Image: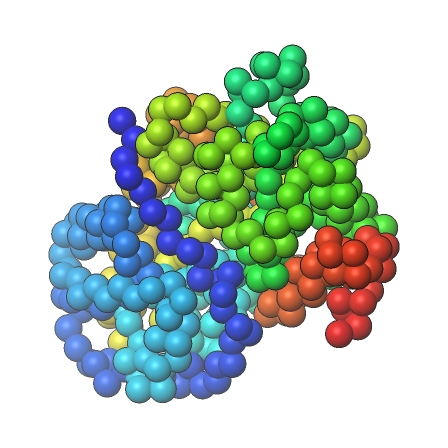
Length: 406
């Protein structure tokens, strides 16, 4: 039975570029405190995530003989909280970060490399290790991650005598065929925030484009796909204003036959048994391409508090919460994907509906892997270019040139 579920908004989607200095010198006034208790800060402030993560933390704390003092803050407030704690030298012993934020925090010297504590990082998906790495050191690990896929309504496809699209041409023709009355063939989010950039990355990356060269022909082709879908009437012009939650609402209401979205929408869709859905990987442009999607999820880190004993215990807590057992348990409960690819088969047996997302994670990339701390600027250019293209203010060939020119 599916549980009612509210996934936390990705903190990175609303965070302005970070301006952090001096974290590395922020030794806690409790640097000499006992290592039998740890402070923890994360942004899982809504149930069931709050409770599920809390239970996993408590179980791990008991296994290493420590007690936890956990603070949860809304996702939009986490980085401000980190800034405040840094300035007051009260950084927690364990800090959870949205994965695109890790490199900016690590660059300040505020985090300890996990190699200092001999934490084994073998077997984790390359994308999440890439996100958690700064200057060749891994600073955090995630028990589970998420990504994007294509949700389809099987009944609508069957009625039209169609199958789920696998290529961009099939996506356009299928979306056109499924568009009828007040129903669009497909919905996606192209809102002018990092959320719109996140949704565009599968098209950009799968087509061979890159965030460090947005004026490439591959980037223009990716934007042209979205423009074509809107101009053909297969997608609503409102995609420029829709969040991912809005997209889910359109799909759930039967006003979109397909949508690009993430697995955190599954519990909400499953609450209504009349909603038919299935998921597949996001289509590729040309034969031979591999679907590549962005990697979402949170990493657990050890801040530089100055208390070596507590840091060592904090690293043990992170090892525990990212253990195979906890990866499977948290992924099953939260509709996320284990970060160790060797667990994929076992996980899909537990959650068959997560198969396409699990396959996608194996090839998923981090948003900070190429540009590192330069990602927020590129993300802004991406959603700006998308808005220019979809509102007709620029052609797909010129949109990103205008966006990058400011």
